[in-house]
Image (cartoon, rainbow, N blue to C red; front, side, top):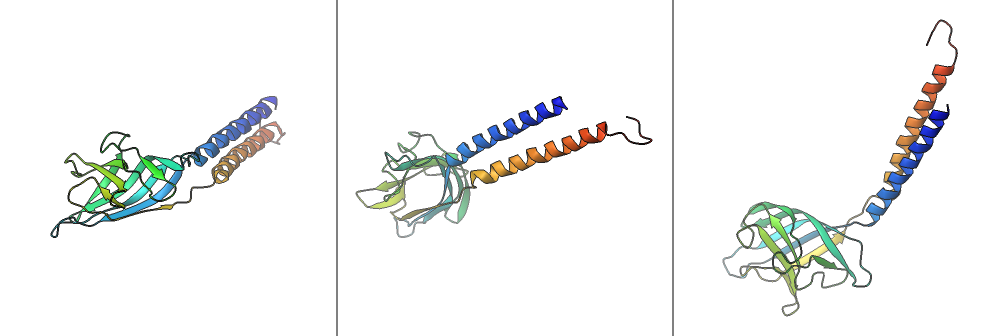
Length: 194
């Protein structure tokens, strides 16, 4: 019985520890749906559009911006849609800083860069999206597109208590079943020998 009691305390402690980690991780991540569309710079050129999800850190209240840490989605050029593979590290392409401002303009002049499954703007799959204060608009690092629209909408992140509640219920369910099994083994039964 003492072993079961100690085991239940350890299990409860582990569940509480896991839920504490889950809560801080959920609070440290923000998700934004993004989309942009840039018209062709040339009369017979092709517009570029993209949409997906940006993953960021929490708001830096001093700088009033988020750091983009991940990206998923698609980008369409000339009717061909490429999958967005991932975010490029800051300074990798187009001197990107991967910052998302809390107010307009939403991007800096350095913008964010990512990799697509197709050729991208540099022929290697690299794409950079930025804001130009001179032209007061958003664009991609390309001579073929003009300035257009860029928008983000915050996504709801699951509440930390949803994750912790599920883990706690799972731990309590296991503990209850274990307690019933131990009680059954200790209880005298007629005709049953353990």
